[in-house]
Structures are given as structure tokens and as C-alpha cells.
Length: 171
Image (cartoon, rainbow, N blue to C red; front, side):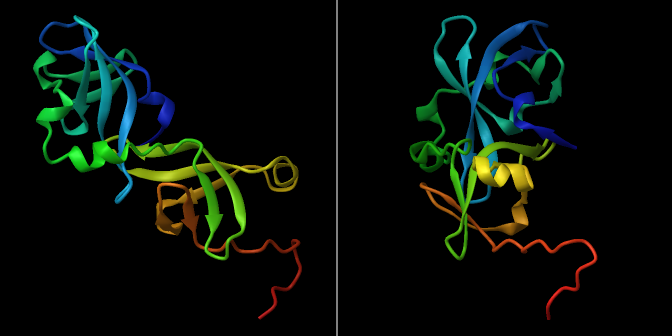
């Protein structure tokens, strides 16, 4: 099921063992190579230490927060050797400029939708500049339309130009 990014940002992390909050998930750790949320930076509820919750340790996403087995699933960053390269990139998706392969500026990423079971980002929602937003509104970009992701921008395949309803499409 696809959910918007707000359903997983700034959420309490609840323990099944204690039945209470053990941390607060603050922001995601996004792998730009495959657009997967690998985990979340969390502030520990007991000592306000910055820890990491891996997405594979999340059992469920309910109204009260993200559900994990216990506080023990929270890990310090230096212990996650396989994730160090992604942590060093420190990729932030919201606010990233989006342009087409032919260098046409489209807008900036304002939100995204992710699959709640696999934590793969499936859609990007791009807010366009003021002039384009009057005529076309916001833009939804599927992950299959993404051509390249760099640290500075997201490059998508060229957009189809709209034609008036009933007008023949040129060959």
C-alpha cells in the first residue's frame, strides 16, 4: 500500500515488549541508488541519543507510530558497516530540483509516496513554479520515469506535451 511521507516522518517508535514509546523517528535515510528508505534517524526516548532504526526492523506502521519488537533494534551509526556509504551521502529528497533529460526545469520535490511494506519510494510529487502551477498544477512522477539521481538534482524522462482535448496528435 502506498503512503505519503508524512505517515513515516516524525513518528513515535513504539515497542511491542514494553508497550510504550522508545524513540522518535525524525528523518529517513534514503538510498539514492534505488530510492529505498533504509532506515530512520531516531532520538532515543531514554537518553536523547541519536540512533538509527533500520526499516527491516519495523513490524508495522499504525496510528500511534512505528512498531518495533524492542528498544534493542535501535543501533548507533558506527555499528552499521554496510550502511556507511549511504549514511555518508546524507541524501535529502524533499526540496531536490527536478528537470527533464532535455534540461527543462520542472520544479522541486514536495512530497513522495512509498510502499509501506518494502519502503521503496514509488512516486515523487513535484511542485512547479507559480506560472506552471496555474496551468498544470502539481506533477506526479513515477519511479520508472526517473532517468538519473544526482546529489544536486533528479533528472526525469522528457514530459509529453499536452494537446487540447479532441485535437489530433501529430505523428
